[in-house]
Amino acid sequence: MLQQQPQQPLTANGASNGRGLPLSGHPGMAHRAPPLPPPPPPPHHRPADEPPAGLENGAENGHEVRRDIGDILHQIMTITDQSLDEAQAKKHALNCHRMKPALFSVLCEIKEKTGLSMRNNQEEEPQDPQLVRLDNMLLAEGVAGPEKGGGAAAAVSAATSSGGMSPDSSLEHSDYKSKLGQIRGIYHTELEKYEQACTEFTTHVMNLLREQSRTRPVTPREIERMVGIIHRKFSSIQTQLKQSTCEAVMILRSRFLDARRKRRNFSKQATEVLNEYFYSHLSNPYPSEEAKEELAKQCGITVSQVSNWFGNKRIRYKKNIGKFQEEANLYAMKNALGARQGDDSPHTPNSTGSGSFSADLFLGVPPVNGEAAYQMGVQANGSWQARSSPPPGTSPPHSDQSDNSD
DNA sequence: TAATATGATTCTAT
DNA sequence: ATAGAATCATATTA
Image 1 (tube, chains in turn red, blue, orange):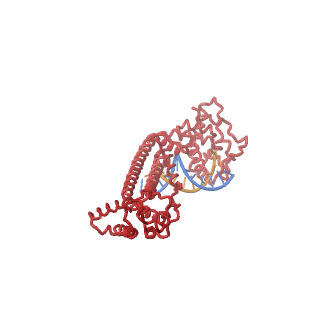
Image 2 (cartoon, rainbow, N blue to C red; image 1 turned 90 degrees about the horizontal axis):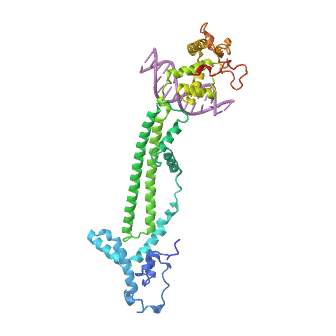
Image 3 (tube, chains in turn purple, green, blue; image 1 turned 30 degrees about the horizontal axis):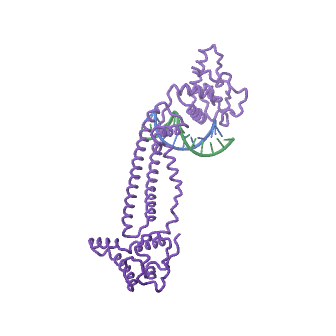
């Protein structure tokens, strides 16, 4: 980027450019296209036909300038040793010095060439993937989105899609929403605060540097870089804010939306319905999708809850048939009674009693007594009749829905 | 308050 | 996808 420069920075410049004249006071110094000092003037070029730059005259010129620069440097170096007033005065004097632009330009170049140029490379910010993730999540949770409502609702529905919520979920829901709104509010306030602080600080630093660029060599580029650094710092703070916001949302979600935490038992009537179905289909307690829907409607729960219930029931029944004996008998009895009352329908006592009544298949359960008629349905190997290939004859003789119709 | 019941979730195998 | 099994976390009961 930078063109070749005189080998020795400052002194060389001053010295080799002994005449100093071309440099002095030229406003164009800041962006001098030919950075090299002009070639040594012809020997005879010196006399009084020099431009009337108002400089020293004649033979003393070179010495004067050299002393001049040395003087400036000295003043700069010792400026801190002086009292404030003195320093201010000196500063002013330096500022007005005709050599100042040239000197500054040289100093700036040197600075560029040395330390700062090394940091140039790492300017590119490859959009931290983690930050992107955080942003996405906050957006998805409705914290960072446009406004309240849509986002939160989406989050809730996403969380409940698998489990299904109990009817009284609306209370939880509004609680969750208000909490989420709180988080959202805090997040936005903080974000704004940081944003504001960042601009404030940036402006401050820029002003400071601009101000200082009058007394020390600061290039606009350097200011720009500094602004970049500040922004990076602040954005890392913002990342932290986003991270903790995400954590808060996660905690909130697990507190409010994890259905396990607010488990409600199903209503008596609902379990009744489910049990009735289960025990009347004990040989094959796998309700079809339609049956599940029907049951869900009857119980006021979701289909997936019905599935959960049957999953739990099957496994728990199978694990300990003995424990469920009483229940089984009860429902079998109920079923039988119901069948007898509505006797016009051809409602055979169903599979429970007859179909899978293979008394040799007790699963280590002591034969309770003579009433052990309704405990069957489980095979010796611990599984129900092969679901995968239901033998045509195994299906219960009656309609699946018959016992649960309203 | 411990023990048990129960609805939900997660993991694995099919 | 679905079922089984294990497990979690809460609800209920003794």
